[in-house]
Image (tube, rainbow, N blue to C red; front, side, top):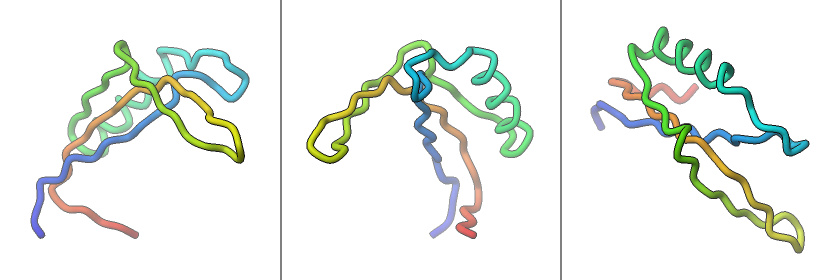
Length: 76
């Protein structure tokens, strides 16, 4: 297959202690992705909801989505 590929990165908006992840952290992460991939798009102001099962309980997250485009996908 040939690119470009759309990569989605799902990031929690809160730490494991329930504290919000600082906006500055997301901004720095976007700068890093832009330096590596030439650009990035974030959806951090309209968080999504994530659910998953952990043992017998359902856990809930609010997530931010970051997308980057990449011409070649290297899985190493």
